[in-house]
Image 1: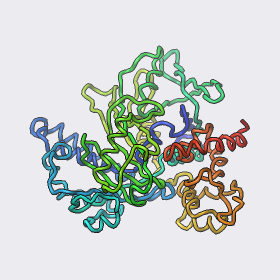
Image 2 (image 1 turned 90 degrees about the vertical axis):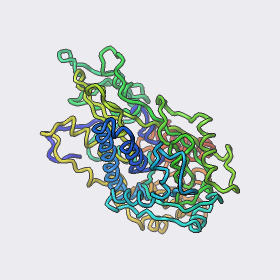
Image 3 (image 1 turned 90 degrees about the horizontal axis):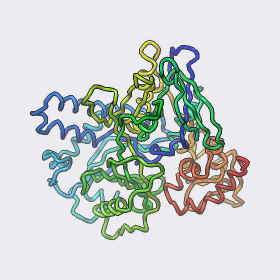
Length: 524
């Protein structure tokens, strides 16, 4: 939201699919501040490029460092203000040798990372003004106690640092609902089909849109149009050309593959980072929603809709994971409960002077011919900053006013407090697992979900009929989700609950009951 905005400012947001149906629900679930980018920027600064191209090298380092610093500030905002959606997770870096060769990031100085790690992570803490839980050293004996799944190999010690974690799909929906509460008009399953052009200026003054559920078509007119299509931005940009002509590419897709393993492969409150995999990518091994996510970072390729990772990627992750796990724990292909891929957009400004750099930060650019602005790049952590920057760009300094989104608590935050699960158990007699799940998903809105609960017919728990055994999801959530823009069964199984992401077979079991409840609620 903005203060001092001119009267009459209105916002419409349309989404081709469900909210978060593409890459926003397919992340590693971290609100991370960019430890990898800090390392890669340092490696570039200490390379031969500093001698051959000193100005460009220093500029590149400053740009990456600024991005990491901003990530820390945005992570602080999320973990401080959105406690109903987020939590801190400690991440272990185990070291089995004091010198690594070949070195991570291809730079000799990182061969000493096992020695430098404690200082590096303290510097990382400092970038957040030490508002995150402090990094620390874990001895070999402590590691065996706190992370018993670790390999029996000769661990010298472990460095532990903290990152933020969230349910990405729920955060996305909370953002959309917060916008609606502030007066925005939002709609999912509405797709832009083409632009509406002013006959005199040739500028885009609106869009033609289609409701993908009803098939209805309609027009939306606006003074300013912003494309925020992530890795699909270039497909949107082609629609701002009168003849649908091809546009100069602005976005490269970078995929991250993920698999889900049973929760017994890691402690329920501690993850692991492999910073030096066989192909140089980062590999996270993280507890999430009672299971374990194994996920990778950027691998450049074209973005796809509803993608499944290639089998060779799944096998690679299983092989990498085994390096750190005890020989008593065999990670089998059949242990993979679910798998997915998400894409991050790496962006460059096609309207900038020649030589513009591909960025891990976000890029905002206005087409001088069409008047349409697009924003691409960035990462989950900086979603709020990206929104602020694009409005500053579109509205201009005279009309932008002062942004106050740093003070806003997202949908569900009102009424949230740490004792809420206890109050829910005492009033409704739901299980502790269900109460904790509801509070960390809906926050203060948990009461509205519980009002839709039906008795279980058991002495305990008294309320909260489970959707499927082994998971905390209850039938009342399906009824509530139908009030939160859920339109399809897949919306429920993949994003309002995360069952399809956690266990595809469990999702298949729940599917008929989800269909029955949605039919009742939506009149199918």
